[in-house]
Structures are given as structure tokens and as C-alpha cells.
Image (tube, rainbow, N blue to C red; front, side):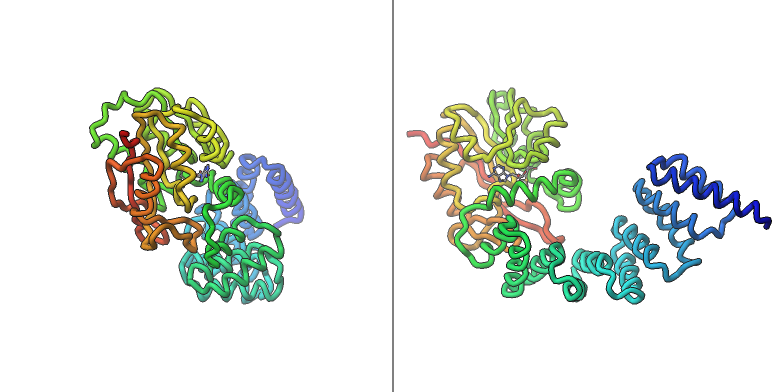
Length: 402
Ligand SMILES: C[S@@+](CC[C@H](N)C(=O)[O-])C[C@H]1O[C@@H](n2cnc3c(N)ncnc32)[C@H](O)[C@@H]1O
């Protein structure tokens, strides 16, 4: 091949790289593909178009090109990393873990690879291997916040509470007042926390908002909104009965979508502004408010006919403040429905996953203290956690007649 042909290819490749770096994906892709027609063995071209497909979330195509590049440069650390990352994106966790392992063989101190390897094994529930990966990373960089956080949670999941505490405390040393670590330390030390800190709730759900609608009903088989709505229908209420409804902890609006059609007005309240943004985009609420629900209800009197709290009481231990506030905020004929996860303790417990569970006896007793009687109580499968069913109870309350 002549020198001018090579120069020409190099110039065109440089042009494609330039377009690619300016995120002009369509034109860069076209040029890379044309170059590959002329030079199918161009490892760097395969690598670059792999990156482009990764950036544009075409993971299968990215993998195909990375594999071709790998045949030409089997020990390139960047290539191995990006290939494994792509496999992880596609949920091919075994392949991804094998890829990160391969990279670590070549570059044992590749911290991002160790971190991702730990995450792959954690998702695969190969906890001993996940622990090894995080520990190797922390040997190199003891202050790696996410590795400390994930390791703490890993020990917590396995009920190794002393080790979990050690790493949560390390997180707190690195990030003073970190809401998740504070809450988890409370969960382990059974400090009698009465509810999850608002900061913690806001933080998890702000981060969760993008994927919530996909992950909850999909991966976690979350069915509480549908089940509450279906119980409501079976109670035989004339559905036009609800002029004003409030969705407490409305999140992205999964419960609102179920209850919107049976009320004339729907207010949604949530601590997480990002969840509220998602709910707002659905156009099902008349009013949306970023607020803590009990303090929001405390500003209302005789206002609502129906209140729904789907998978929200799991963030409160002591339910007395909520029922007290509901008594004032709800009308005389009002209905309140909610779900709880069941506890075998007498009242409520804070679990290692940071969620509260409640015994049905405690829920009924607390409701009754504030003038609420249960008209329907159903044991139910609510969702899954780590592929295991989570069971709980669905309740419908009305105000007791004097
Ligand atoms: C698991 S999500 C459920 C969302 C929605 N109810 C559904 O069924 O999809 C829990 C929601 O409750 C909100 N939340 C929890 N405790 C809250 C509180 N005390 N005040 C306001 N929002 C709260 C969280 O921010 C989150 O959006």
C-alpha cells in the first residue's frame, strides 16, 4: 500500500476522532464504518467505534467491535475495561466480572476495575468475591468513599454487623453526617430511631428517580399501587365519592396513576424533588408539593376524602405522628389506605436495608389511638428483594364513629 494511502487514512481517522470528540456521533460513525470497509483490521478504529456505540447506548454493537479490537490487542487495559463495562451494562455480569478479572491480572492496581468487579460480584451475590475486590481496592486507597460504602452494606447484608459498623464509621469519617451511613448505624445499633432522616430519604430517591419506574414494577415486581386500587374497588365504594385525594410519598406517581381516575382532585407530596419532577411530567396531579408528609398534613384541616400511602410507611417507624396528623387533615367520611412490611417484633423495627417493618397489631393499635378503625386488612406479597418475596399488609381505615 502506498504511503499516500496511509496518510489519507490517518487524516480521515483524525477527522472522525475530532467529530467524535465533539459528540457528532452520526458523522463520526459513518466515517469509522467507511474506514473499516477499507481497513477491516484497524484495531483502533474498532476500539473507537466501540466507544461511540457505548456512548450512544448501543451496547451489543459496542461489544462486537471491542471483541474485534481485542483480537488485535488482547492486553490493552482500556479496551478490557470498556468491554467489561459494556457487558455489565447489558447485565452480562459473569462476562463482565471475568473481563475485570482479566484486566486486574494485567494491572493489579487498576482501582476502577476492582471497584466494578466488586459491584459485579455483589450483584451476582458472590459476596466473598465482592468483599475481596473491595478490600484489595481499599488496600491501595483506604479513603475510596464508594468502596467503603459498598463494603459496609455488603457486611450489613450478611449480618456481619461489627464489620458493617467499622466501614459505615469510615464513611462517616470521610463524609461527616452522611445520611445513609447515619441511618444504617442507627439500624445496626438499634438506637431506637423513630423514622428515617429526611436527608437520607431525599438522597436515595433523588438518585433513584431516573430508574424508579423501570426498576420497581419491572425488576422488583412492585405491585402495591395496583393491589391497593384493586382492594378499593372490591370494598364497593361508589368511586365518585372522592372529591379530594392526597398521595402521601407520591414518588414518580405510580400510586397516583391508579388513584387519579377515582378522584376529582389529586395532590401529591414527596420529600424528593426529583421524584416530584417525574410525577409532574405524567400530568396526573392537580397539585404537587415537595414536603415531608406529616408536616404537610399538619397544615391542613378537614381537607381530604382519600389518602394513599403506598410503600411509604417503610420510612417511618413510629406511626403516631402520621395518624395524629391524618385525623386533623382528613374529612369525617375519609378513607386512608396504606401498605406496610410485616415485622415479627411487637411494634416496629429498623431493618438492615434501612426500611422499617411494622407488626399489624402495632399498626391497628396506633391507628385506633387517633380515632381510625380498620375496615380492611389483607396480607400480601408487595415486591421482591434480592429475588425473595417481601410480604406485608394492605390496610384501609375510616374514622371511628363516636
Ligand atoms: C418507595 S417510594 C413509593 C412511591 C409511590 N408511593 C409508589 O407507590 O410508587 C417512597 C416514596 O416516599 C417518599 N417518602 C418517604 N418518606 C417520606 C416522608 N416522610 N415525607 C415525604 N415523602 C416521603 C420518598 O421520597 C419516595 O418517593
